[in-house]
Amino acid sequence: MGLLKDSARGESPDLENDPVRAEENYERLFMKIGRDFVHKDDLDRIVKELTNKISLISLRFAELLEDDPIDTKSDIGALSRAYTYKLYLDEGKDGSKVYPDLIDLSDED
Image 1 (cartoon, one colour):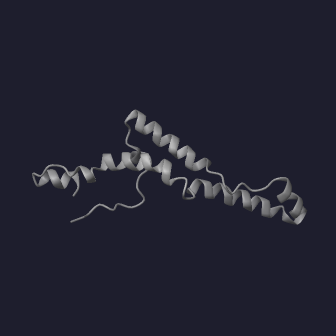
Image 2 (tube, one colour):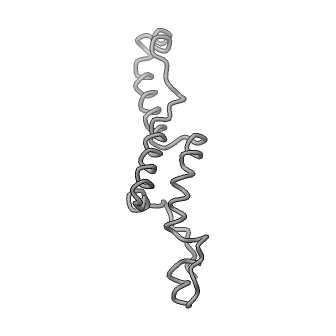
Image 3 (tube, rainbow, N blue to C red):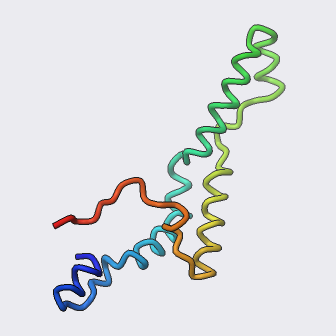
């Protein structure tokens, strides 16, 4: 149950579903899960780089890929977000104010 619903019912907070604690846990876990998934910033950069290279294909396809291969293993975006979350954790800030959830999964009952 949410903190507001718990307090409205006179119940003690359910610490397992505490949004502040959940955000902190997510920020801590991001360093681990970020290495297993492509972050949207990384994908955006890779697609732009690939598009630029494809536009040059008619000029020198084989030479281009040999001389300047596309880095498909880059994790710059994920590392950047992990350092940002670490900073929020160190400063005690709530990262959900800067990076809001995509959808609200809270129970509307």
